[in-house]
Image (cartoon, rainbow, N blue to C red; front, side, top):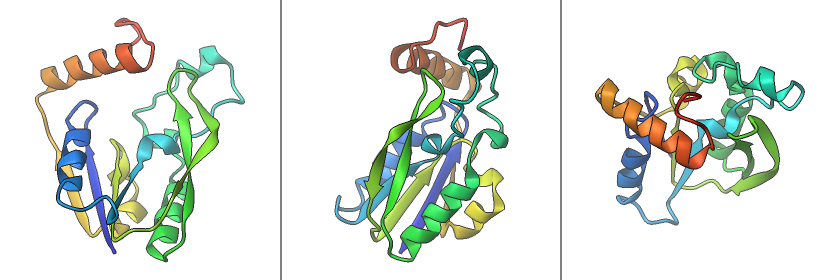
Length: 153
């Protein structure tokens, strides 16, 4: 099994790189995990408090669960990947069943801040892009997909 970690700043093009890597394999050989689905559940606090969370800080991620899931997949066990709602900043009840495959790609902006994740990855990729390009992509994505205003972004 090959575990590829892909990280980089918000809006850097990680998703594009993931798609390109996936094109090198058949769909039966590769699966993807998104670090974004491992944001901590914040349903226990008010929406106003959730809006003040720094989602660009490693403390916002439930790394223990992510590491456990990576280890389980590596051991040949299927997992139930959580899902996260960016609009409400809460984890959803729905999960995604992920089967172990020959290649596992895990991607996210904070991925390599956790040593355990770095150690599990056989290949580590950092995607870099100009800050102005990243900002434009972030604003467009968050307004389109996450229901935010330009000011909130």
